[in-house]
Length: 116
Length: 116
Image (cartoon, rainbow over all chains, first blue to last red; front, side):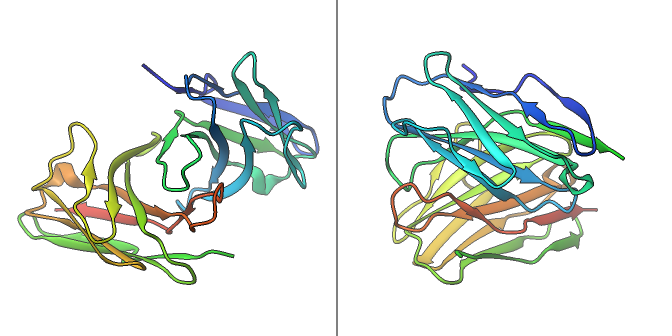
């Protein structure tokens, strides 16, 4: 069964506007971590933001924020004030358990295009 | 911040040859590293978990004899694609996580493998 689901294969956003990338997950483990990574066309994976299952507040990192709705099992990424350099693939990922060695399971990805 | 180095970045070789890809954690020790494979416009698929000093754990469907993994030290894991064929052409990327709990995985820049 798919554990991480990103339902938006592609998204367009106007420069300087905000955009929300959707991510839903499924796990029976009460302890887990949720991650968002950015992958430009060059291929490297850039860590953006992390949310732990026990974190009380939504994570924020600069222009990135994570809208964590635990009951709905969703962890949407919000990018504010989009820039042309934000055009890339975005992956949501989950790590089950609290083990730093735990493997990541990735969603299908969303390709974001920022229009000038 | 934690840095993972992957080498080489590009490999083009003839069918039947073996290719070795190195993944190094430059400023931290990693008892566990991960190897992923990615086809164009698709997500990262975990191939195996590389464990320092012991055998790798392969995901279902991944051929152990085709993709040899060695994790001889706390800073180096290698993936050898044996007797490579055109269908092995792909983007291979490794990751490692510092021992600190809840640290994100840090990725190498990936290796683009093309088998002629």
